[in-house]
Image (cartoon, rainbow, N blue to C red; front, side, top):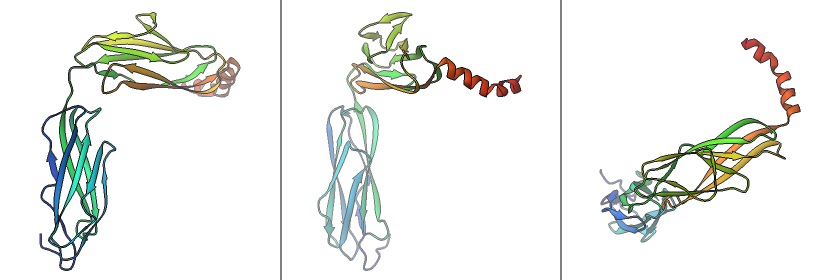
Length: 238
């Protein structure tokens, strides 16, 4: 591309870099070099990244014509596995390309471990009659190579597996799925119900996740009123 006379131009030697395979937890580093191929000072206004796991710094905010600069990038791989792609955004006073996008790519290797997967992270119970228990069916799968150990944390929830109450740790073999039932009491509750159930595990990537349960608790009297108020809708369907 021809130079724009009297203007700065930012020209990178490369805009994409692929790291060699790396172990989870490593901090990967790379420098993107660029040159001001224009005829006026190049000013780097801002350098940002696509997530907090990636940091980027510019060697100098002002680059004279014909001079080079560098963008140093660090990627913290903790909590990542498999193929990962991140972007770095470079904003400058280049009138042709005021925003350049750089990309780093890495394949993160994780040692054999348990890997937790839930079939549902949000459960909407709808209308609940006060005093009745909310029952949340949940499938917990182990996609890893080692045994998964799971523990549910909630002050009132009761956990069942194979129709038997469970206290403590639930074990899921590699490649298997356990069917769990979570029961929440509604005594003393009315109106909107929102509960978070913490699920802890030995999955090194997702050591804790939350199951969100919501619904609306009504008394028998309120339910009767609702039924009478909207009964005509049911009659129409008949």
